[in-house]
Length: 609
Image (cartoon, rainbow, N blue to C red; front, top):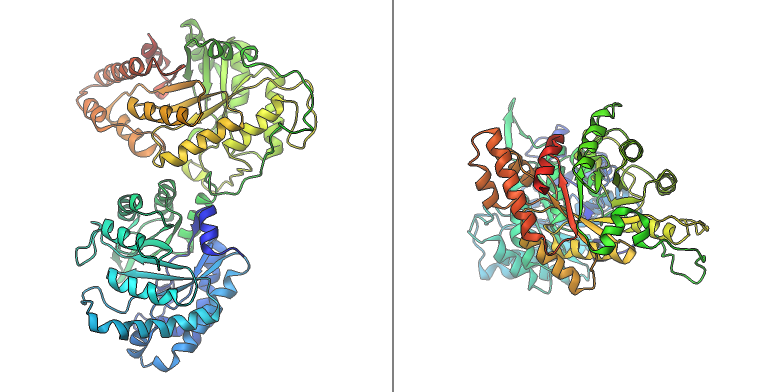
């Protein structure tokens, strides 16, 4: 099995959740030594570990957080230190099986209000060494030094842990304001651990709920190149019928976990108040994210065995492609398929767009993981009955690789020539959170599939002759929270065969220019069609800024929209802003993809007037 550093570098990992919360929920009194239960109630502890493993945790932490001489003496159990720690490792290892890693949990010796005194160093180090020696000898995979509030104590513990030749992760606790109780800001903590050669991974745990943990991670991540982990509490506890209950739902917790992964956190789990339900939902969602799930590798068509076929040039694929090839501005309007079997209203909207001279209708594929009439059926109907080209979004979420290839071939046979290849939102974002995502490939892999079909080869290496002539579009997000990763993802799409891109709605032209400059500097130059969204209200601006992944609405624009007093004012101002953005980016982009808010195509058309 690969070690923690190898695995966490390949993809983000899911850590388990709270142990104390689960023990307490089983009816064990709070004054019990929870670590001693490894000996007295191994079935209880092992069962909790197993619940987390079954929930999808990649890392199981031993129930040894306070199994040191200082803490065990308080319960009269110091003489059982070795037995407790060995049992803790065995129980975690049994539940982890062949796939999960076992982390040796070690907590601080000092309380948050105590002072770190120099003449205590030898005593503290000896106490850590005693416990760590047992954990290492019993076979943990790495040390997780967690819930530390004194940075110097954490570094001392890391120095001792390093003696045993295992990876060492240090996780500190800060409050909702990003400081320890002694006022040490999270930035200083991250910098100190980054510069400490005894520390392999940096983390935050406890101290607050998902929102504050996310905020603190945002502050610390720019200072850390080492793997960063976050284990937040399930919010703040509230008293319910005499018990302190953590109220954050698995859904709420998962949304923040997903956002943390997207800003660069490499490991997420739970601390106080979290349960296997939190970890299960988090694991299901995070492991379906692009860059996390291991996708099927799609080989390029460019091999010695590639068939000799007549490849369709970009300009010959469709009218939309021909305009892009000639360097002429293209226009499209996004119209979402209905949640009913009646296509007439959608067709009427498309006719309005055609009459206005729009080049294509952009048809999303289950936006926000919603279920609507098949976008491919809608696209075929639009092209057949209205006579305007479509840009059909095609996402990787809902179909396996065989089904996707069949759709691509069938759609092409039916006349569809222009696809926008996207990975797709996880089901958790929509109305069907219990549905299972597929994600055999992400947008990069599916782009390669289409490129292969265009060169006469299917996913099984069989010849397709004549080949398809699909115009390959991909998405681009100039305002991604992790710009380096997004840029590399975009370049990978181009290398896989992307011929043009459509961006997320652009509200910050400078962000678009920075993205394009960075891509062009690395040889990633393809036509970019800019997404433009006419806002209709301040509430609409706030929703896009806070709820739609990949969309960033600058404060200045939200401030302008806040002055709209009526619905008409909001729409007028939104169109005005959209036109300003259109004109600002005109010299750099190949065209515009305009959204029709709430299906009002007239608003989209006014942007393009």
